[in-house]
Image (cartoon, rainbow, N blue to C red; front, side, top):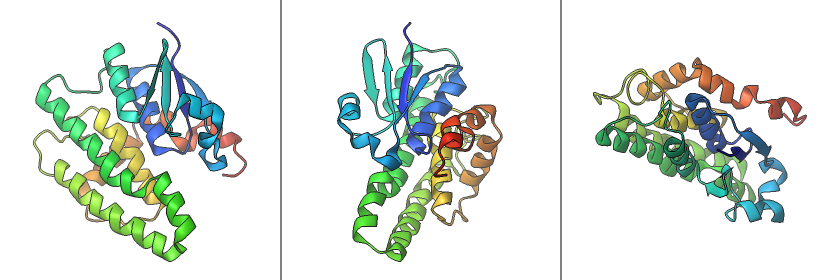
Amino acid sequence: MGELVLYNYWRSAASYRVRAALALKGLEAREVMVDLSAGAHRQADYLKVSPQGIVPTLAHDGAVISQSLAIIEYLEEVFPENPVLPADPAGRARVRAIAVAVAAEIQGRTGTRVREYLEETWDAATMRDWYRHWGRAACEGVEGLLAGHPDTGVFCHGDRPGLADCFLYPQIGALRRREVDLSGFPVMQRIAEACAIHPAFIAASPETHPARKADSRF
């Protein structure tokens, strides 16, 4: 099979999801950095790759796939070894539901595009209030999907990390950077602690990414 090429940005939570999934599956991709902070995602060259102007985007064997969930699902279908989805239909549906809840409810209200708009129209204090309110409100729903469910284990689904953890852990990191109070969400925090010491998440982490070390702004 051809080379996997991942257009992403080291700080992006959505990019982190895919890097973590690649690591869990034992796959390697050539990374192309798209510097969101410098507006590279809005440049004409990148818009030819991703008309939405978002990261990550995966290119493989002539296919170009955007959106982190679609990318990970593609990897799962094309490279079935080391699966990140459960074997049973109900388990797969549950894991997907958690992933979508994180992407739509948490990131959808507190992500980069929302932040850029708020920074242009609101003062800093109002913007912080937005993040803290909607961050916690969205986390309540995700915590509800996890707490007390018989399939929740060390990780979101059982005792091996998978698709849902690839979505949850990077988003928790983003919320913490924005100083969202995560007290009251013990299951999410416990799962985050397990992810923090897992080799795949360490390998994919923004903090250890070579692009971060080369970026003098951070």
